[in-house]
Image 1 (cartoon, rainbow, N blue to C red):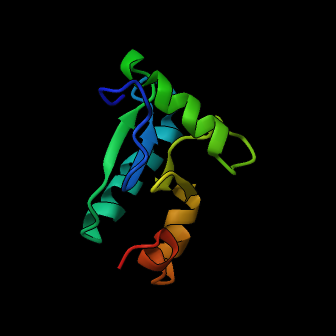
Image 2 (tube, helix red, strand yellow; image 1 turned 135 degrees about the horizontal axis):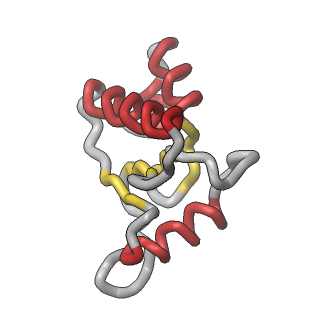
Length: 104
């Protein structure tokens, strides 16, 4: 959470949880990190399991367009929902990652 008590929304943000207990979610988070890094895209990570990120968790749930708003990881760009790990994988496969994330 930023110093003013609001969820950060600027830039590319990877929402994830360090205590999900879900092996698939952990692997998906690692994969998204790898793909964003490999594409040389600067991004922030917000661990939603941390109390200091409560406002970010609420923001993600309110603005997610994912069918299951609990799905992690999710990626946002400038406060706008962009997709899940499956979306990131697909866009990367077709060379459309930067275009779909709205970065060049």
